[in-house]
Image (tube, rainbow, N blue to C red; front, side, top):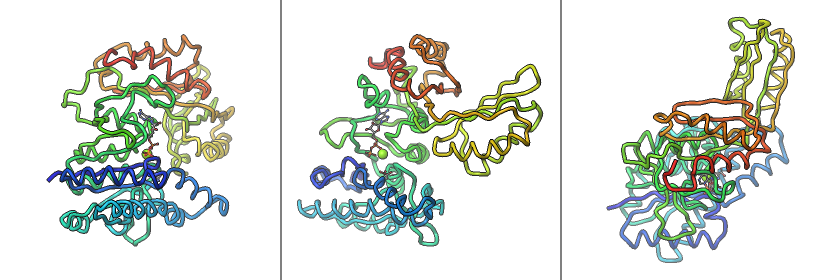
Amino acid sequence: MTLIVQKYGGTSVGTVERIQNVAARVKKHRDRGEDVVVVVSAMSGETNRLIGLAGEISGTPSAREMDVLVSTGEQVTIALLCLALHEIGCDARSYTGAQVHILTDSAHSKARIMDIDHARVCADIKAGRVVVVAGFQGVDEKGDITTLGRGGSDTTAVAMAAALKADECQIFTDVDGVYTTDPRVEPKARKLDRITFEEMLEMASLGSKVLQIRSVEFAGKYNVPLRVLSSFEEGGEGTLITLEEDGVEAAKIAGIAFNRDEAKLTIRGVPDQPGVAYKILGPIGEANVEVDMIVQNIANDGTTDFTFTVNRTDYAKAMGILQKESAELGAREVVGDDKIVKISLVGVGMRSHAGIASKMFEALSKEGINIQMISTSEIKISVVVDQKYLELGVRSLHEAFDLAEESVT
Ligand code: ADP
Ligand code: ASP
Ligand code: MG
């Protein structure tokens, strides 16, 4: 018998009517004889609302209590969906993460799933029930509630699919698949029928929030067939995330990702000596601030300028650390900018095609967009630009690489 895991995101369960629509869709699969496990997010806006409430009480809330708080959103939707399923004659049971033993480490707000005890789920499936599991949450060895990071319901779904060896994990959302770029920024973006795990992983890690990065990692590692589909349209094939060998379209560029949550810091005029990079970044790492791009330029006066990017939420913290270090390092000055964004081109075809970078830089220069930093890997090129150029930059690259047209690049 076919077993599918379906995940419905916040907008898809955002109202009672939408929850009833989800129930109807699930029932259709049951009527076709498929076994269905459903993972749901909180109603759209609910997780932000809960975070806001905590913020009214505390500027430094306990991570443990935050997880107890934000996990409640998903407990509401699992119960409502089961009620909607019962109303249309579909046997269903809801479970929190703890009830199905989604065991995680204890890193509150960014916990990793270590194990799932699926015995209870399997028993329900055998008994002919739809199982509805709360996304985004787990439980650690002490029995404390944990959450998996924003967008974490995707990861719950993939982990359930891996544990149950499901035939497919279907991520239902408010777009009908993965596009060449966020259709909210470029309306001409084209839906991809397929994208490789590798490309999807890059797109997700470079800012495309259509799938949480860990869900893609998990799906790649455990070989879970993963598909992104619309919960508002019927009958579409969505986008299949595949292994490269599966004959994925041979386009050079799969898509354009961008990240608005960036900030950069520069320490200027540091004496150029061994150990400088370590002395600058050591304390930043110790403060749990993740560093992304790094650029170092040596001047001919024996000093170096050192620039790196961090998440915008860590900007003030990183600036404080750098300013403290600067005197000790004998630096000339510390400057920063938290109004920058990162735009990235992603595609496995880049490996075998030269000239992509220069074409990218040409397109940006034609629009008068100044590139502040560049970084590359085998399958991506990223640039940092002023945030006011985000939309223009994405659209001009989309045009330059003919992404609106099928496999032309
Ligand atoms: P959900 O609440 O269902 O998890 P998300 O908001 O997390 O939905 O993800 C869907 C959104 O991701 C879309 O509305 C779209 O704006 C955004 N998005 C960003 N990049 C892409 C892309 N390349 N393809 C499709 N959607 C994208
Ligand atoms: N409700 C959580 C969030 O808003 C998890 C999710 O939607 O996947 O991040
Ligand atoms: Mg999401």
